[in-house]
Image (cartoon, rainbow, N blue to C red; front, side, top):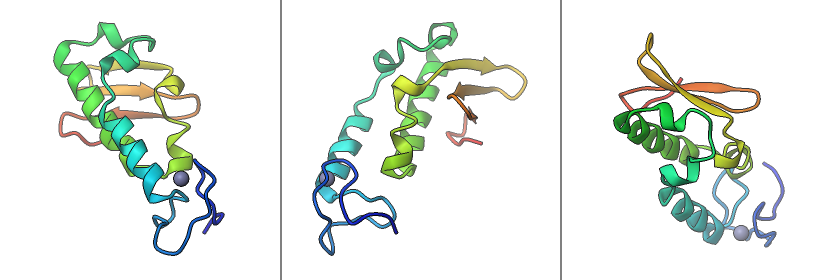
Length: 115
Ligand SMILES: [Zn+2]
């Protein structure tokens, strides 16, 4: 396990307030989840490729992206927030929306999964 302080607000994590393996207190986790659930395509308008996607591809992107972020721990998630998104593009061969970060990229599928 990591530190015994919340990685967002720095509060000490008392027993029961810590989410396992996430190093975040319940208050900050709820705040983060709320912020993520509010993400929309407007938050990705700076990302090259977003406006080459069709409307339904864009909806797929935002919906899978939010689910994907919510599965990450807090520390990891901060590396994959919209400001770190380098490029998105439709992959006609796999029929996925591909999302690119600095060192890694994923396929987002029509089944709302990623690989
Ligand atoms: Zn906190």
